[in-house]
Length: 141
Image 1: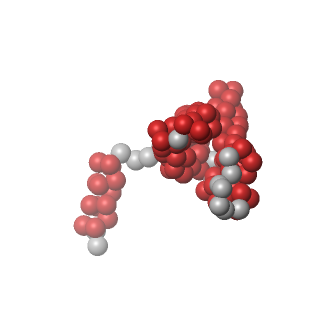
Image 2 (image 1 turned 60 degrees about the vertical axis):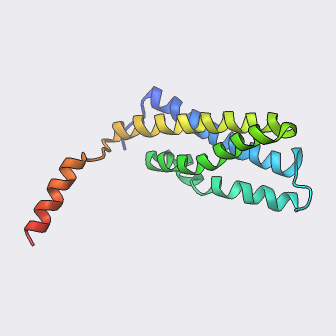
Image 3 (image 1 turned 120 degrees about the vertical axis):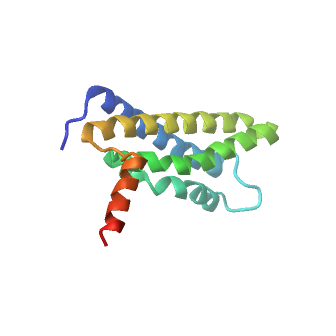
């Protein structure tokens, strides 16, 4: 296993802490700070936490690919925060914290995945190279 450089390790800590912070914030928000008036607050908290739990194992393990695809999940929370900021004066400060944590997690995930991927020698092939390989494979059949 390739040793993680200091900068990459710092980015990993940032990514892990911001992802865990968002998970904790969503749980706190839905369970106690502003629970849904008509639904069970614990069930709602679990529903809001569930998507963030999907990539958690890979994030804690420091897998760059998991950090990268976890950003697709973060977009749900990003959009939720922007929507609440726009329409709900009463929960605006809650949404601002959610937006900050989501943005921090998004940026840290991208940077960690990029730096760690380079350290491990993981690269995406250029599209032209993939096309040439596929053409050669299909012409050879």
